[in-house]
Length: 198
Image (cartoon, rainbow, N blue to C red):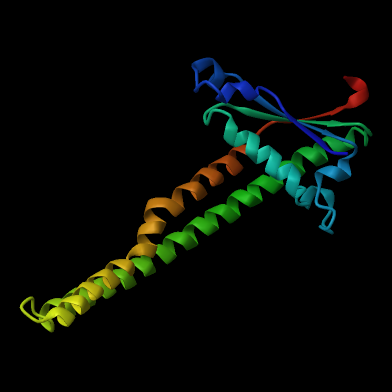
């Protein structure tokens, strides 16, 4: 059975101190064998394999818990020792996986910004059209129904601005944060040890 353990968990509980940031935070994975680290459905060679979803989720989750500027280290402890040659394979596979995830996140961010620009143009055009119609074709001294339509057009125009505002106010920064985490994980030291050696 796979067991994941994170060390130095208390580092993020009381705020980020200078000692927390300077101290290397260790994420420890205890596994039965090397196969548990990787996605069993991925036919690629080990060095190009995707990590198991639960392993990635665990590593990223701990990385997000630690102080942002603190250096990270991954320690993989295996019950079945696969041989010395597996150490470099695991290191490179972990680095390749998170480097690829960082690239995908950057691409997703660029696509989101492109979508935001398009949505902003559409939203502003719709808002301008609604305001022009409400103020030119439906003057303020018109009756009750004209007032209802005028207010409805104003609301519709601002509703059209909802998507670009959501993108530029809320959607972009979680992607940026996740991209930085993936980039950090792609460069972290990776130690591989046998349970028998501990």
